[in-house]
Length: 91
Image (cartoon, rainbow, N blue to C red):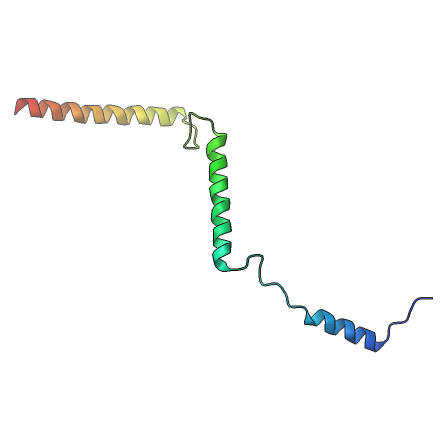
């Protein structure tokens, strides 16, 4: 036969449970929390840089559109430099 629970047992169990102080957080201080989050962010960024390959450290793929835009920009700057050089020669 099971032991019957009386009111005193219930009261003491409740008091023990209520006496426990709930945890405020995982970290000891706000400073420690910031440190851990920053370390995690650094780790994620390092993994992303390493996973893309040695030739692409920026973490983005160079698509055809990006390559065309880069060539157009290089042509623009070449034109600017050429015109500046011609102006200097004329003077």
